[in-house]
Length: 112
Length: 116
Image 1 (cartoon, each protein chain N blue to C red):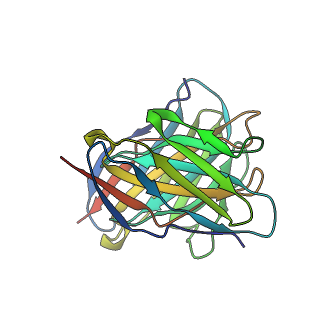
Image 2 (cartoon, rainbow over the protein chains, first blue to last red; image 1 turned 45 degrees about the vertical axis):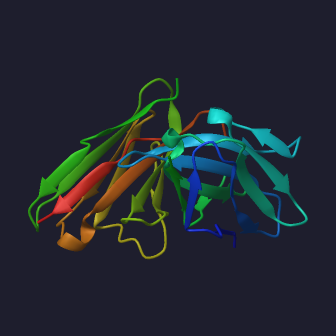
């Protein structure tokens, strides 16, 4: 069975600082990896996804993530955050066209 | 493109009544829709997967007689919470998978259900 672990439940950073949100997964087969963002009282918006190909994936809002198969990780990064990046971030994994399994979420708080 | 709507966005109902939540894909057709439940400050938990024209597949521990799912068309799925109780109060989110896009899911904005 697949599982996803987001190692940090909360990450506070100052505006314009870099940030990394960590995600590790466990699966015995090839997986597809996703990062979603959720603003308060809203649904989820896809930030980026890894299906195949280049291990460095660029997404919206200046975010990027790197797939590391040997470490079973898919960490999300942004070189300079903005106040508007304050939100909940979810890492998710799926096997093929199967269901998504979500991590516990990381609350990113940007301080001025 | 790829917009999913949910209606209502918020609903308050009395204990023992039923409430229906609609999930629509506005600009694409979806053979598969998913229903999730999210408790405060927690992750999304998949409740069921619905395929157009067939019975929904429920996750372990989800009562199918309590959470009725209907996926009657390629753009509409409904979740009916029957005989609602306060513990059913939650944020319900649907997602839709477009035809021929096996790996994508587009999420609705969610429905906040409060049972009094």
